[in-house]
Picture (spheres, rainbow, N blue to C red):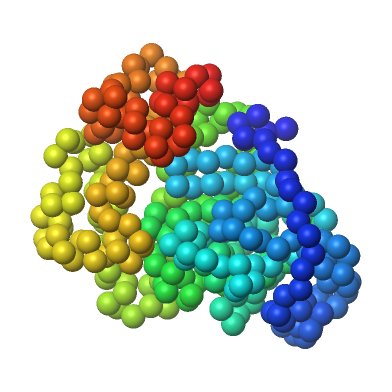
Length: 331
């Protein structure tokens, strides 16, 4: 059991055809053991992924920390398919990082395929067609993040998807160990699990930044590095009432217009992103039992949202409940 997760039920998905290359057509030299068994789709384990944030069939537990969603998925042989005809607004797309705990995970996207086993990691982007296959009994942690959270655009991720990343070196090793630890020691960290979202997001961002330095032109690396510095600055100064797009641009010696252009690549304005970060910080603190003694209004002020009614209105617009209702639910 994982009491710190928000338990959910998986939904039934009907079988549909898909034009992407079938597993049975992949040659043995391309994917290990690919001909050992019939493909999962032929055993009824096909799921058509219809939305960018769809809960994967076989999910037994799920938890969200702001812009990061972590799920535990397990089951028998499975094939997940996201066809082009179902992909709509790519501004809602998400990056998904898979860390197998048991069994293999195969990812097909952007003309590549990768195969990983524990403790390796692999990613795919829901904004483009993909196929993910678990050819045997499996358990995995699925991390879902927004592009802006890790300082990447959809164009950037085309260089990073369907590539197997070692889970025993550098940032990949830290992230892999953290995700395994969430599975192994969920009960012990129950009271701090919301705070761990920042660690998951930070390590994921660092890992993508490392990979971008290996494959991207210098100009793109510089832009992504600037975006990550801006994000770190905002999160460090959320409590300051003066924090604004104009102040952020001035601190980083760029024009407001250029700052807006950078964020436009992620389909959001700097002001909206700052507000979303403030609300995410409030959500984390409202869920933290060690901060139950703080009034709700003070939680908002700690993130730069002054005025109880203003804070409550913004929070409800973002999460569907008032801050007080959210805190009561998590008690």
